[in-house]
Amino acid sequence: MAAAAQAAATEAKQQSSAVAADLAGFEQTATAAMADMGAGMSARIDALSARVDQVQATPGPAGSDGAPGKSVELRATATAVQWRQVGGTWADLVPLSAITGPAGQAGPAGAKGDPGPAGSTGPAGTPADMTRVAALETSVASLILSVNALQVAAGKLAAGQAAVPALLLGATTTVQVPLRPTLPDANLSASALVVGGTNVLSTLSVQSWQVVSGSRVDVTVKASGVLSAGAAQVLVIATRQ
Image (tube, rainbow, N blue to C red):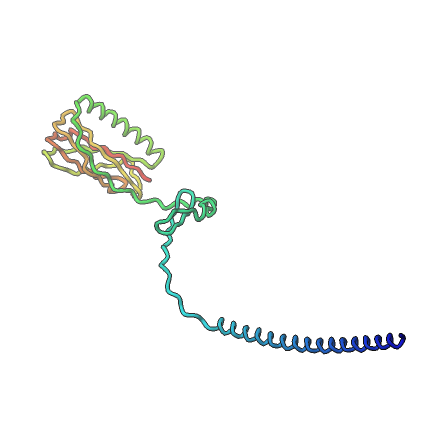
């Protein structure tokens, strides 16, 4: 019996050694197979990477042109700058408050401009009755006295009057009106009017006037009828700016 047990043990030991040898051979075979597989996989990956690089380095054919884009339009409203594509809906691009700075300082006053040309003479008015004419003459005389008083103090005003000679229908004449006191010649302007006397048979109108100097203004007068000598006066007020 002991001999049988020893034989069985010997056989089991031999089988175990065989299994161990088989396992060692399998491990070697598996290791070699995995090494070969890894080397092959690495080679395939390298080849694939090279192919990808080649594809990326080679441009494809040019694509066809797309449809033309719509033009962009801009406009400014009271509150914002807006934009849209032609035919589209306006949308705010930026509010004006975001691009508007504080008000700047007022600039210096500009140079004084030259006096404008004299305006055209208006149409002749309806002849007044003698009472109204006399009252007007009195008022104008008072005005001249007031102007004379003012110009002495200010040195910027002067006044004058001169008689209008007898004129025929439609005739014109130039009346030289002396100014008192005399003003400097520069920067002068004037205004003129005609006041009729008590023997006026027609109306007179001022056509134009010209400041000749600080001591004289020439006034052109036109008659719409017959006027007796000394029946009217030309009144002038001149100012120095």
